[in-house]
Length: 160
Image 1 (tube, helix red, strand yellow):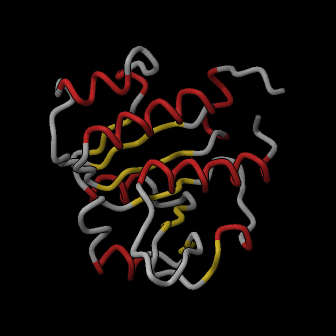
Image 2 (tube, one colour):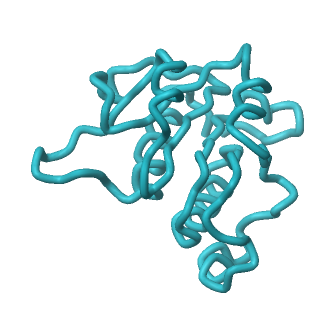
């Protein structure tokens, strides 16, 4: 097991949420990131406020809000990530997440629950992965998707 230090934070996987709109999902993802040692990044605007009681009930005391990196816009996010690897997790991808070689410090980008990410984001990213599902279903819950892909990232990078 790796001992966590301030220096390791660049090597931790990063979960980036694009304009999340369901407080319970974001809170559950915060809890997952806290428990598994991933960094959380949120691209604003969000569809809720962080003082929402539904949000607070799920997140409980698992996260320190000061440890979350907030970006005021997608432009700010992509500008700051210019030289970093961003992997979009989307139902529109062709490649399955288990067929991909993750690296330490990857940013895993997840779209908004109600709409995913805009086409312009799809076009600017080359790395896109999906979680295979039965054809009759549209998508998994966002927090479930984060847990699935983050677990594979951690398994491959042996971060935990």
